[in-house]
Image 1 (cartoon, rainbow, N blue to C red):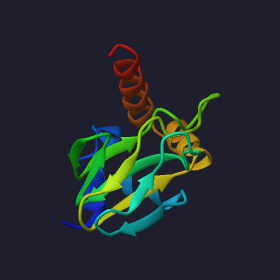
Image 2 (cartoon, rainbow, N blue to C red):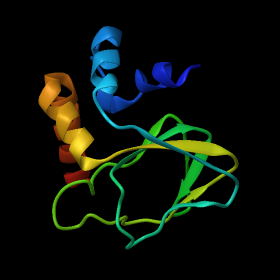
Image 3 (cartoon, one colour):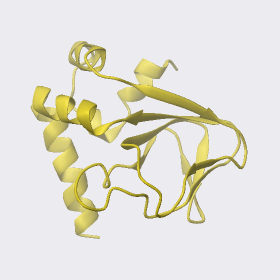
Image 4 (cartoon, helix red, strand yellow):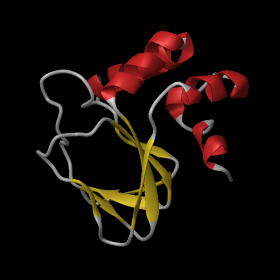
Length: 128
């Protein structure tokens, strides 16, 4: 599966057509990073780099394994608490994509679907 196809399986982009997704992603900065087993992806209390997506492989978040594709951290992009609230460690080889706040804002302003998905995800997180 290509990285582009992975985007279509991420909840943030649910309902976004392939053509729109391609257009949206072409406008923003995408920061991909690769990790190996045991590498630290994020440390509780450290500044969050932005919206963090697991593109392939698996990560451990405070004792729970998360399989790609998944959103590792999306609640700490804006506001006063822009730091990780959990430790995130690679379980084997994996890669992430970070979308910084400027790029995320561009996505949210460019697509009503992405905006609604993000707001729903944040609302669900608050209601946990």
